[in-house]
Length: 491
Image (cartoon, rainbow, N blue to C red; front, side, top):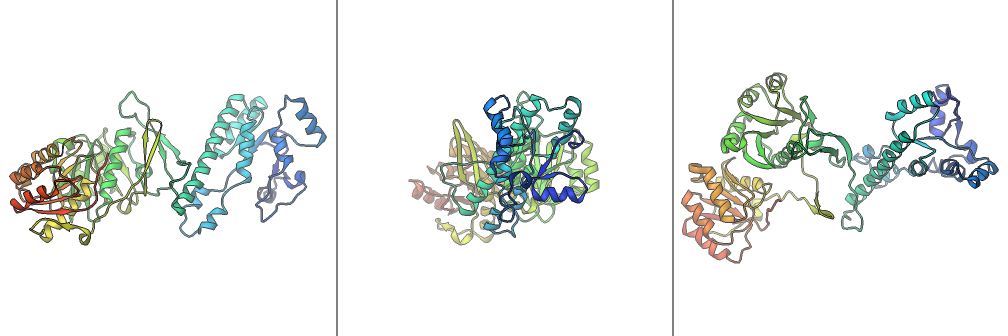
């Protein structure tokens, strides 16, 4: 199309040969630079003739005189396809130095030059825009100023994204996160139905460093998710990543209403729902196993906004698709998801960056501080409860029986209030249950509340000035208490 429009086309060696083999005859970059491609193609377009032809201000008399004097061709369109660093950098079979070889130098420089002179030069960084540019050339003989501006903005954002990928890879490989500058590579993934509230616009961006995540989930419904839906699904994904058995997590406002594991997924769902059926209304449900028709039949009796699982069997999907207010997601790899190692948090004037450790507990690292040691069953239940509480907004308390939560409290300013709230949620189910606290107990009053409810085992970080008083209270009631030595705050 460009040749038909009367354009002269110059191509780097690889593109030149590709076009030639298909009987499309263009000129090589070497024909104007006077140099062959050097160092196995590392140096192709880095030449004054090339950049003078791109950067020339065509309203500047001195620029035009130099163009004539040095016989520099003026470039109207620059088309660049960078090395696919996003794909290549994530390949496990490539070494650190192999990945460095895929850092594009000449292409990035061409894009920057074209963006700088967008008033005269059209920059194309993706085939997505080719048809629009060809249409404008055929209709008007040139691209419009508005199109050139739009393409320039998109191109420079692409360059920033590309460089951020490289920066991220090098930081991750070397562990040098505490550096003077940080970038986050983000790629547009779509517009959401709305933000936290219907009057707020919201958009979704992909973080390509994580291969599996809620942003990679495939939406099987026509109804788009809201920002709240995505946040809730992500919270569910983080919790469910702690468990290997068939598990169900129900989330409302980014906190669990119920978590349960079982040999059978249907049983896990029923137990998770029973934890707090009132709060589960209008929540989201995440599974780490494929959803079959039996589970779907039970789900269809309840009101939820979103469901997510590795896969929905055909019959199950047919049952659930009739619910127009329900958005269904499949996330291949959900059952093997592990949280990425970093967490960015927006604050006024900047960002916080912290390690996002999964804080896995091992029985041999726990410290029994009470006179009574936990039974094997209690220890297993305590660890299960801890794996939920650390993903729950602080101050958080989770009461668990076996592999099912029965009472959850979160977001309380007072520790004892959180305990009382969780106990109220659990009701009679608190008897002979285990309790996890994301922070230490500053006073013994929480232990008194637990004892009255019939709780028998407690897992908590420890570290209070009144630990001795708290431990003494547990001993008075014949409870067992374990210190994790690590806190589980989440905000």
